[in-house]
Structures are given as structure tokens and as C-alpha cells.
Length: 76
Image 1 (cartoon, rainbow, N blue to C red):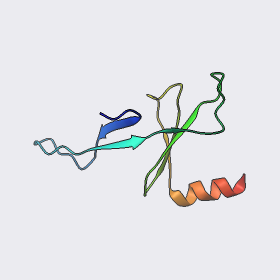
Image 2 (image 1 turned 90 degrees about the horizontal axis):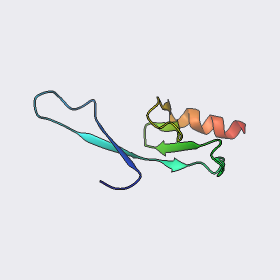
Image 3 (image 1 turned 30 degrees about the vertical axis):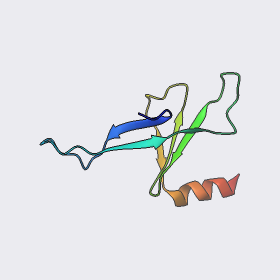
Image 4 (image 1 turned 90 degrees about the vertical axis):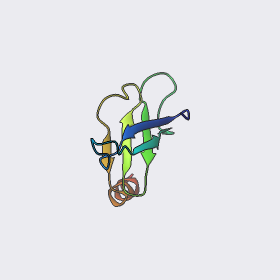
């Protein structure tokens, strides 16, 4: 398994032996602090931008469409 990749079973997998796994490559945001405070990571894919708090990676991530992510960035 490659470092930095988060593998999970795809919704295309079935319970009868067909298993598809996909991975997200998480990157720490330049807005994250190095002192253990704010820790934002993102993993872009063609259909979604995944965002999570790297201090608690097991918690639910935020999933945005690329258009929504782009609009958010333009608003900064």
C-alpha cells in the first residue's frame, strides 16, 4: 500500500466476490498550521473534492463538486 493513500471499498463492489477498491491521496493545505492547530487536508478527484480534518481522519469528510470548490476558492 502506498503511503498517503486511503483505500476503501467502492460502491461498485458487490457481496459476491467482486471487490473494487479506490484510493484518495490526501494533501495538507497550505493554510494548516504546523503547531498542531488547524489541520486541513484535501483529496481531489475528477468528480469530487474531499476535505477532512487531519487531526481526526476517521471522522466524516466533506465532499464538494469541483464547481462548488472552485466557487468557494473564488470567494476568498
